[in-house]
Image (cartoon, rainbow, N blue to C red; front, top):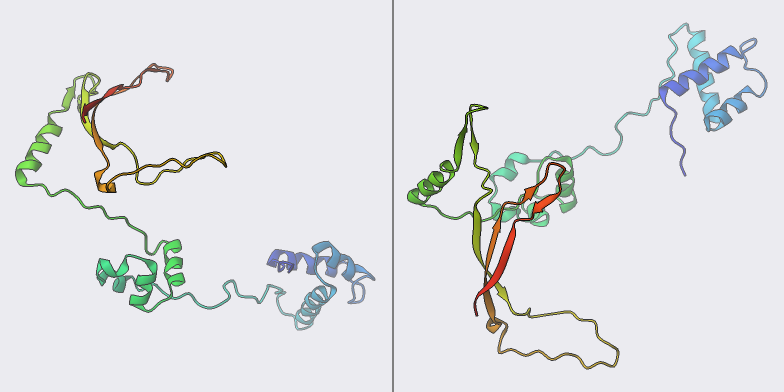
Length: 232
């Protein structure tokens, strides 16, 4: 396992320790090996720092033993052509592979841009088409649920604690494919139907309301009134 590089602070401390132990321009016997063991580096690394420090002192230069390794190494990252991506048709950027082929970059590069937050994944759902009359009806329904709070002097939505929501739900009697666990010698269950399009559907009527809680968080009423078969 490769040892981590010394920080600039550690390099400065090493030079100070060696300089304090020097006699006649040379460190004390065994001091280099001791410092190398303390900082977990090789003797050669400590000797290089000592040589650089001595040369700068001889030339009356400011002591500078900072690392010459740049902060950023490796190949420069490719910039994201965000303007080009935004002008593409949405059908050509449905997947990272297709987006990469369209703009001439590898899918891994596109994935890196996603991690960097330059581009993001978006799931687009079809919205219902509403006419102006339908929009007015929805707005009128929403505004009708507002009440004026005289204590706080502001508009608030009704708590709807005494409102029951009724909705119909369709359920299939069975699924086209089911998984069971049976015995090793048990006969496999046989299910048949003309087509999966002919699986019987049942409509249920469900009724729910707003749950009620106590001050300590205990549930007084979970809001579930019931569900009943509506038609067969």
